[in-house]
Image (cartoon, rainbow, N blue to C red; front, side, top):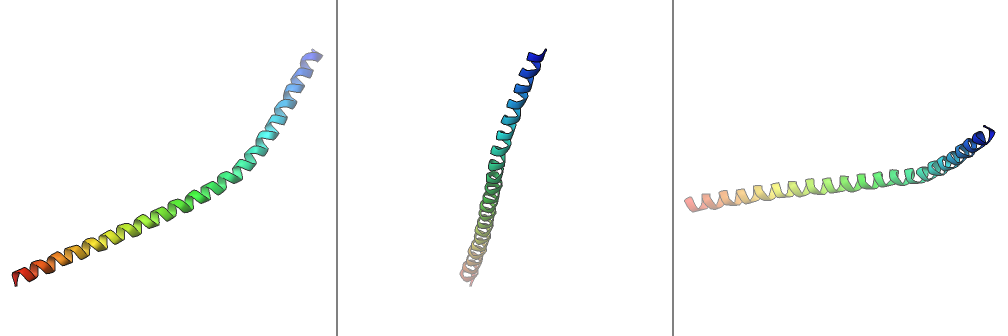
Length: 78
């Protein structure tokens, strides 16, 4: 019975050591994950802003093309 209790205690100590190591590693990775999320967030925001600007430029270009077509048609009629 005493031998069983000592082995259980050693297993518990090993688990505590492993848990401590894992928690320390996870704290390190946790800060890295937070920085990674901020980096990805800024990258995605930049990408969305660029795509929005690009779509606005395309809309402006389409308007100019339509206006040029309208002017060309109007000039052909007159």
